[in-house]
Image (cartoon, rainbow, N blue to C red; front, side, top):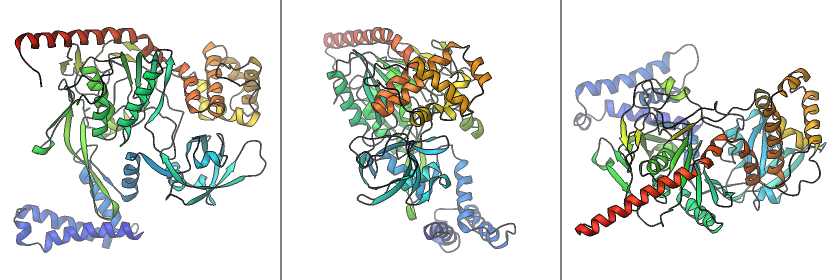
Length: 564
């Protein structure tokens, strides 16, 4: 057992022993006799199991950690013990930067693969390319590592070196590159660009310390480019820091209005957070995209926008996490994420989903995958089924009717079970053969192994018929599908459409960068297409909200009332 782990286990064990056996009157001032007996029983149980368990050697760490898991599981799904590695990872994800190479990586065909280097970073300057397979890290094979372990090995202290051995299509020999780690911005606004001449798109992947500032800068930049409408994408965003959810919401909701309230057992957990007015109100039509992977901070933002009628919410019902955790640092680098409050949207909704069954809570609904950087593993192969649309339904995940609340304009919204979109639109599935080719990295491999056709000089480029025909022949030669399966699949016109977009996406990632690749892939995003159609309705909603505000201000002036 490594020393820090052993020390942590022994420390907890010793602390319980001391409390149970030596504290005497001090402990009795806090605990009654029955509680003291329970503490002593716990220490006796651990010592007996450690001394006498016969099947395998069992360490104090194993026993103590297992008991911690059982204890916390009895509370709620989001109170959790964070061993040192997990605690470090959590803190790192919340920072605005890390030290590494500056490459986006993902798992392709079972191998750790470079999706794209970030321009200007050490990895980019050393010539690492999209499509490179990371075969070795400091001489250690990556096949033996979990993806998260490989990513941790790419990171390290500033100014230190890491040697990566790459397998590059077209080269017979491995390519060894030594890169000096440098500070890499950890951006949570992964994409911010114009979809149309007047429609901006902003995708927030999670909420770290820099998110509020990133969003402010992105919105200002999009305005300069002529943005008059906005799609805010929170799909797959599992949340993060509460203060950053508030900082982002502050840029969308009217000044002085409630963003979120927290309520807990102790007095200090009762807080009401209101918009500060530090930012100029966006004042533009907004559609927010959400799905089952949108949780916590994402639900605070989407709930505030929906409750204040400054935008429409479109997609699939969110995860339903209405609990707030405070993270406490423990000895030896461990941590405890302890639920200390519930949060409520401006309309008074608690959107926490029922967790009486942990199995249903954690396995019932899938979140979309996405590509990662050195801080998280990416996987492009998960999609949601569909399509279905209705407006606005009760959450289909709940059997019983949920409590009804009302937005500022009187629209009905629902508590429990997450944030229910104003328009539920399930993501369309890929045709089965396209899904299979994606899981086997067919679209990723082909351009790197067989080359890209000439003429890819601008983002207007489309996949030529001859190149697509070469792709069909190649997947049969590689036995990714049989000739019979391909012939049958091509009877569906959608198969050719999806194939052209997927090839274009992979080629654009390399030729023009991740943003252009992302734009190319959005052609298959039916949720985004519906969001674009609903922007006119979002504009009507915003105008109603602004009329109401003007009428309210007029009434206040006529009565001499001033709102605070």
